[in-house]
Image (tube, rainbow, N blue to C red; front, top):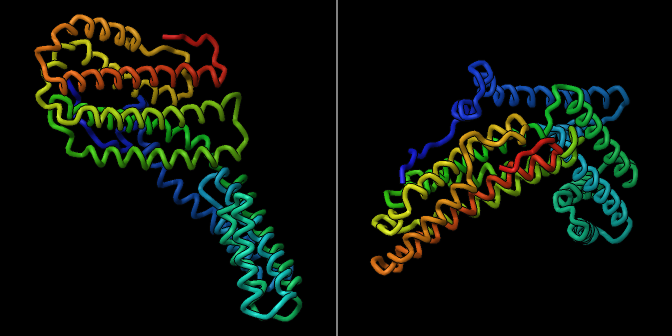
Length: 380
């Protein structure tokens, strides 16, 4: 089987593989740096606005609004909404428990019980990210010694947090808005290229020497999968952006996870396969399927980048490759007595995993095209 050399994917290689021109490739390289600068600018602006408004209205503890804005303002709009929801719910629960338990008992028992019951309530409601914020608010309401009653302090704290969240959402919406769904689309395109690099690294270990960076490729793929999952959750809090966007992005993310599981299974199947002569009888059909899978990964990444799935890949017919490989398997089956059982089982496992990955790739394109409502979708 002829294998391409495994590699790690830089953003420059990503741009080249996606087929963009030189100017667009340079823009892709610089965009992450611009994102960092934009996020820093928006965060500073939101914090300054909160502090200025607090001074204008005579809120002496208005810095809590600035702190809230800094905490909830994320790099994209969807993540900002998620963080804002968690913070406001945690603050309301904390303020309610802090004021309520301040009416009973003496410190530290009422404070201890307030934090305990707030954490339990957040856990029961599925608000795990809000539990710590509830605990912080309880601490401020019950432990900070200030003039006035506890309910006034609780009310002020909720108001200040509301102010910070409102400013953060407005800044995230109006100042250089960044949408999680667009970042997820680019992340998914990169994910399928990295899956392809992982696939190439695995195949180097089939009748050859395993790729030296195979463990790093696996870790890079896992990191990208986790990052895209976080973007997927954030994108669900944003406007859809068009018909089928949520369905298409969610479907591609699910296919990516399934393909990764299939690649891990393939990695296990090719172990100790350096001298497998039975698999050599499956050539060239086995190698052709592997090569077209590699091309399929790259083509699907381009489809995701352009958000167009109805055009079938040129010179790639995975179903035909599978049919030819199965015919080849039938022809060489009678020769099995000449080889070890381990070789035969390994070859069967490898071809089964390759067929599964090929069909998952094809389904990724076809099903996503249907989800986003593309017309004239071709089934090849």
